[in-house]
Amino acid sequence: MKIAIVGAGGVGCYYGGRLMAGGHDVSFVARGANLEALCRSGLHIESALGDAHLTDVSATDHLEDVGPVDAVLLGVKAYDIEAVGKTLEPLLHADTAVLCAQNGVDAIDRLGPVVSTGHVLGAVVYGNTARIEPGRVKHLGTLARLRLGGRDARSQQRAVACAAVCEAAGIDAEAVDDIDSALWTKFVLFSVMSAACCLSERSTGELREDSDARAILQRGMDETAAVARAKGVRLDSDVVKRSLAIADTMAADSVPSMVIDLRAGRRLELESLSGTIVRLGRELDVDVPFHETAYAMLKHRAR
Image 1 (cartoon, helix red, strand yellow):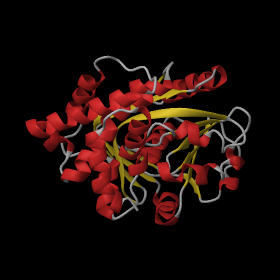
Image 2: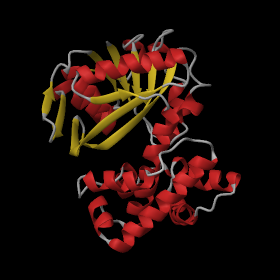
Image 3: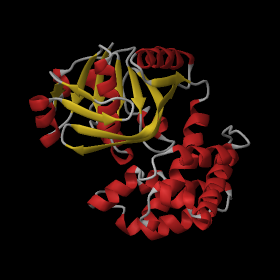
């Protein structure tokens, strides 16, 4: 399969590297020092699931150099999705799958009206990966899970095909029947952990082991789940319990990507996380005090 990675950060480089190691034709669309490192010394992956050093990496900052592909893994930040989506045309043909791996739950809705052709899919990524320096990615823990899905029959067919390719490359991947349920199920966990770790400046392990902090995490997750259900999204009755259980399996020193951005002084994805819950909570008449507090406390640093 011919694949383009647009947004060569932690997620893009990790999964792109695994697919490249699996024998697929992978091109990384990158820029600056990261592009230079990929071209000069390849891609290094550090992971408990297996280290890798991939040489002869195909990397460019011009999408026209790549040409039409079978799948695009879109790993850019949520706030860039429309702007980047408008540039994707050189990569697309009628059956190209565009996998939206953004944090949040609205990437399919936002990208769909922007791209001219192909099939927009949701991609739910579980795990903690980060680009620690140009050309080098670190994966913390052993959780690296990918769930794909579309909202119509043809898109779902592409999701099944892409999941099979990923699985053959050794990735824990699966096509799911209800992508919105999968997106919101992760969002119950991720929206709360992102806000709580940013506000407390503590790691995942520190928060989950503190009984008071854990109770706050649970209340925040209850809010996200309540908004999802009010919106008509199907969630398992024990989604909060399962979310806390997933947090218990994550590397103790791991932090969500928004914490890394906060520490580096970069723009935050706050609007796509707690901001989304606050807006929907008001629209659907659901009380969300945890997310309202997080949004109010972090919005001055969001840009």
